[in-house]
Length: 330
Image 1 (spheres, rainbow, N blue to C red):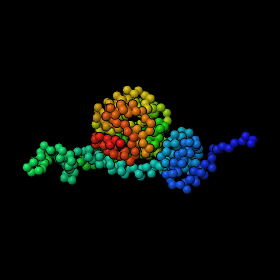
Image 2: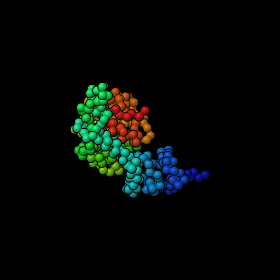
Image 3: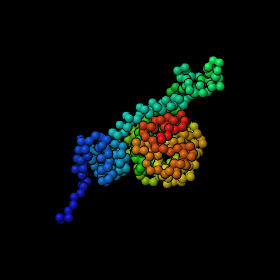
Image 4: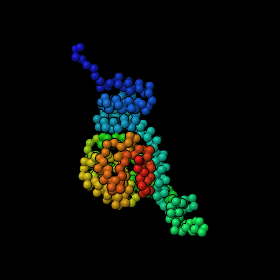
């Protein structure tokens, strides 16, 4: 009755114990939901600056996003623990996604390199038949294949340039995590030349850090404004082979820059032969809130905007590499 009240101290050991206890009694998927709710609804983000808290939580993509948003305020005593948490999540994502991504894109790169004198085992029969329909002999019920079309075998020369252009706004945290992992996977493929660009109102090229996606993630700065036009201007300046380039813009399209200039840049890139992909999100949660007018305008330019799950991303990239219609989810 003396007016005293309880509160959470800076280390909050009882919260740390609670986070540790729920890992004992509940499966990982439930723990992740519970701790995410606690961090978001109860305002516990600042407590993640404490090493003992970081050691108690269950690592997941959303936690990584929260840690990245706190990166600049993180004390040195917590930084190494935070990097260990992020590295564990990144390693799990790479294990889940890397093999399928490499195999899918390797196949797409081989198919996109058509040759006209293929070995028998390399013949692309679907394309060969279509190319020789005029040579159909009805009396024999067959086609004379004057022109053979085949798959190119894996050469070591760079076949495609890929630019990942990622919005750093706070709502895109999960997308930033997944895109960084995919960027590292793509960069490991010698037949792809991969560039990774992140932006808010400024533009940062993190290509030199692609050998370690953890370094990429700690090089980002979640939050702030959004200037898509400026980011695309930078990406456009780095294109040297338009017909062999895929640009992937990952953004909710809330543009703080010059809207018409942004659309003109996309139109110019497509007119030059660039394959342009617009993803509203690269995460398991589906599409976030996004600017529908900008999405419709990009769709009218032939760059439909849609959300994409990480498991679907390799198929989207394969379609872009082969210059066929993108597999837009229903």
